[in-house]
Image 1 (tube, rainbow, N blue to C red):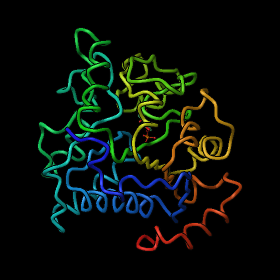
Image 2 (spheres, rainbow, N blue to C red):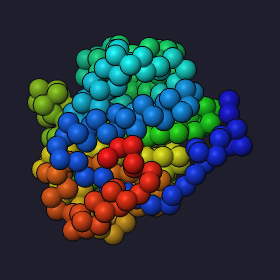
Image 3 (cartoon, rainbow, N blue to C red):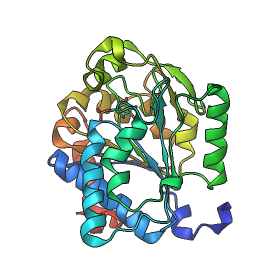
Image 4 (cartoon, protein in one colour):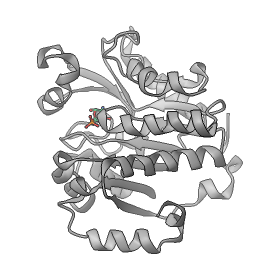
Length: 278
Ligand code: GLP
């Protein structure tokens, strides 16, 4: 268990901004996110790392697996917490997010399986499972770095439209948009679970650092609304504007509808924090 004053100053620093980093393509964007994770892990081997699923994250995990293999990036002391899991899908089911994580990351690095956490979507008492998940995150001192993707309806985790900005881990019904978006993995829409356990928007806002990765043209519209639009519970990603240390990494196609691209590029070129990433 850790307490706030155990954290070195570097982990307490808050730049109080949302920053947008635009990379030429999804490979470069994913590589940058993987480097951010690797650098935080090297600085703090006991990192509490928040993980996300989805096609966007696959390249990041592939990079991290390669860094482990080739550069001995060490995951042995880190702890992970995933954002969400489908209700009614067992961890061993190939459609579960537990299975996704095993396949894309856990199998390929030296993380201790006992230190990897996802909500259990088959728990007999789902509300108790949600409360316990929150308590477990607290027991590990909170999440240092949370990776996030974004759904087409603007969700982070499975925080569907009208998720309260202070919500905690709970069961959420999935919207038709999300069911449709995630249906390719299940074969058809009617096979997609109707509910999921997800960290709440408030849970995510409590993470010390958030990194959202969005790639591809299909994310351009929702990304622009999330970063430059008004904060609304209709689009849970807009809540990240309230976060003291959030970095949004995008490729050119996903950035195409942002109006302040030149400003974001200028910040990335001139902010000393990004020197090692340029
Ligand atoms: C799912 C996950 C989200 C993820 C989203 C995006 O809905 N629950 O956490 O951000 O998918 O997925 P993709 O990267 O496949 O677009």
